[in-house]
Each structure stands twice: as structure tokens, then as C-alpha cells.
Amino acid sequence: MSGPRSKAIALWGLVAFSLILLSFPTVIIIGASFTAGEIIQFPPEGFSLRWYEKLWQLDSFQDALLRTFYVSFICTLISLPVGTLAALATVRYRIRFRRTLQVYLLLPFTIPLVVSGLGMLIVFGEVRILGQLWPVGLALCIINLPFMIWAVSASVNGLDSELENAAANCGAAPVQIFFTVTLPAVMPGVITGALLMFILAFNEFLVSLFLVDSRIVTLPVQIYNSIRSVITPDLAAVSVVYILIAVIAVWVLDRLVGLEIFLRSK
Image (cartoon, rainbow, N blue to C red; front, side, top):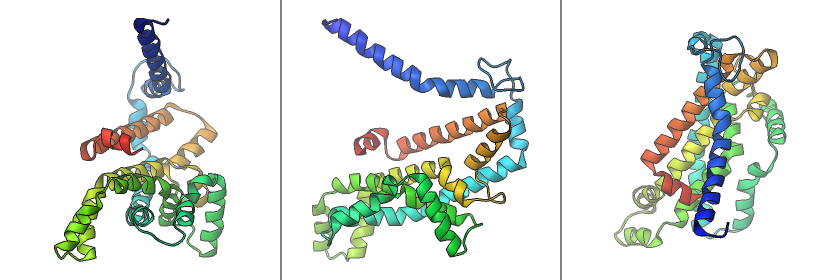
């Protein structure tokens, strides 16, 4: 096993094993969603699209899906200015207590989700905004904001300050420099962070469970409620919807930013 050929075989064997291990759950879910039977099983019992047809005929699923898109949109919309400006402030400018501020901005990432959900439940209840959807998007933005800050910070670290100095020497105002030089330069990080925030909000379950009720159930909570009663193949079809959304997000990221830039930023 010391020769180059043996090392290559061992390396590619580990790679193949990792790929199979990672893709196995996805393959099972996709296969189970096309079953013609009444229960989830793999290999599927025949081939049928009945569960996808049933899925799109369920008003509860359509409503929950639209609510989840709405919550994810609110989360992304709030995180764009907040995360971008926070990343610029903590990386480019010398501000007092910068290290403390950086730790504070990353604090939601270190707190367990159950604690964050309970805390937001209490706070939102005190200010009487529970029972609405937009506070759920705000909460998801708070707990996932570190991902936005990290993504933008990676682009800010690669920004040449001489570009901004050159614009200033040409007479550009600070606001003009920001919109014409700084923001376009860090746009790959902004796009990456925005897509991450959208996907994370779309998938978030635990915090949403604390903040929604039966009238404004999001899709992850809807799936949880369905699993508590009976597990049917339409839940596998819902899982395939999540997979498709993730694939579309990766495709959009590759088209707008490039996966190689995204991977380098991590």
C-alpha cells in the first residue's frame, strides 16, 4: 500500500465511500417519493406520481409553502443591509471595542436554538407581535446573521482599499464611493450570504416552532405535525421539494458568483 497506485486506489476508495454515504439518504427519499404504495419504503412499490399530485392538491401544503417563502424573503431582506454593513464596519474600520462587537454579532450562532426560540417567544410576546409571520423572519435573521457576516467579510478582506482611495481622490463622496466601488466589489459575498440566509430560513424548524401557531404554520412545522400522526409518501415528496430548492440555490450561486469563489470564501 506504499506505492503511488495503491495510494490512489485508497484515496479514490475513500472518496467514493464518502459520496455514497452522503447521497444515500437523498437517493432513498427520492425513490420513496415515487412509490405507488401507501407507506414509505425503499425500493419503492412500483412507480407513480400520485403523491406529487396529492401534494399539490393540499391547500395546507400550498399555504405552508407560501408562508415559508415569505418568511425566508423577510429574513433575507433584513440581513442584506444589516449583515453587509456589520461586516464592513468590523473588518474595514477601527472602531472602539471592535473585538467585543464581533463576538456579539456572532453570539446568536453559539446559543442553542431552543434557548433562542424561547427567548424570542418571550420578547415577541411582551411586545405583542406574536401571531404574525414577519417576526418569524426577523427571528430567523437574528439567529443566522453570522453566516451573512462571514460571507461578506470574506469579500471585504479581499477588497483593495486603493480603489476607494482613488475614487475619493477623484472627488467622489463617501456615499458614492460605497455604491459605486465598495458594494460592487463585495457583491459576491453579499449574494452568497443572501442565498445562505434564504436557504437557512427556509429550512429552519425549531425557532419557527416556538413562534408560529396553527394559523401561520410554516412548511418545516407542517412536516413535523404530519410526522407526529402518520408517515406517508407525500412527506417524501415534500422532502424532494426541499432538495430541488437546494439544487436551484446552488445553480443560482454558481451562475451569479461561481462555486470556486464561494468555496474560497469559506
